[in-house]
Amino acid sequence: MGRIDMTPERLLSASDQELAALSDLCLRSKAYWGYDADFLDACREELTVTHADLGARTAVIRKGAGFIGVATVTIDQGAAQLDKLFVDPDAIGSGAGRALLLWAIAQARSGKARIMNIDADPGAEAFYAYMGAIRIGSVASTAISGRMLPLMQIAL
Image (cartoon, rainbow, N blue to C red):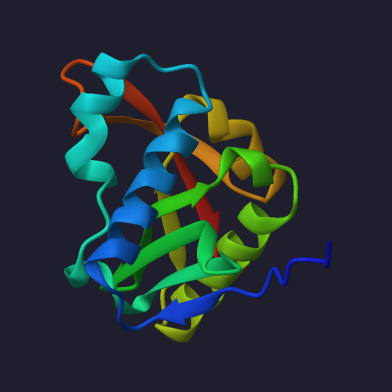
């Protein structure tokens, strides 16, 4: 078996089948942290990758005809937001998450952002801290009422 290229590529277009595969990847990645089916159902809409997500703001890492990672970033008035960063559970620890986060940071810098905010899953907080993010507070989950998430930030 050959080595997987961990270079993120922009996803400018995708079939409905590819979008479904990416959305499934996001759900499987979220499930890695031990969440139950009800929790994942509540997050489904937020974790769905749509045609509107595509373009300069979304990158993937491919494995054959499939995907092992996806990241989406937005930039507004000097601040970037990491909207999605999900890695297939079988590829966690492979460098895919690091490659996607570095891609998002490069996109944010090229868009003149000075900071990148990350509404982190509590299970991923250590990864973001390892990558240089600091916790600056908490933010309410948009999917689960009453749930608070670590708000992380990377200075660019």
